[in-house]
Image 1: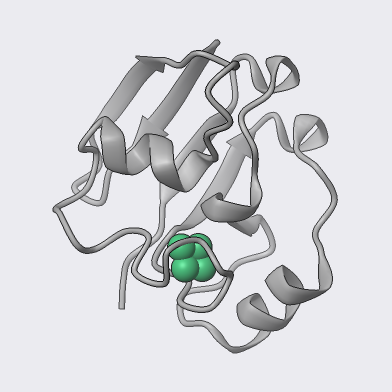
Image 2: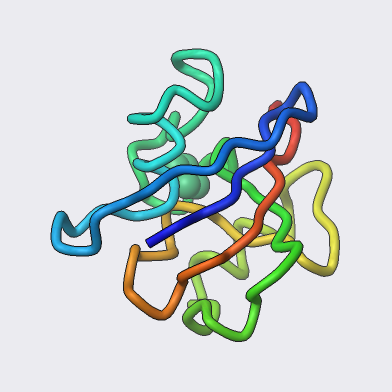
Length: 107
Ligand code: FES
């Protein structure tokens, strides 16, 4: 699927991501080196750091509902907006085709 991810400097990256690798959005951002090493996925995808926070610009309806842990983390993280999600809580599925996100600042 095609994803559009804007990095922390404001550059948009179009990435083509396989859906059969059980990756999540945080892992995509890391493996495509869209952010500086060590600044995304700090907690390893446990919904405990918010370094993978993204703002969903387009395609929010295609993302899974927020779980309790994600909600709790976002209630105390910095830079949170109405369209904030944790990338590590969004598995890569076919439904996400065309999803557009902006990486939030961290810390
Ligand atoms: Fe830490 Fe997502 S990687 S909250």
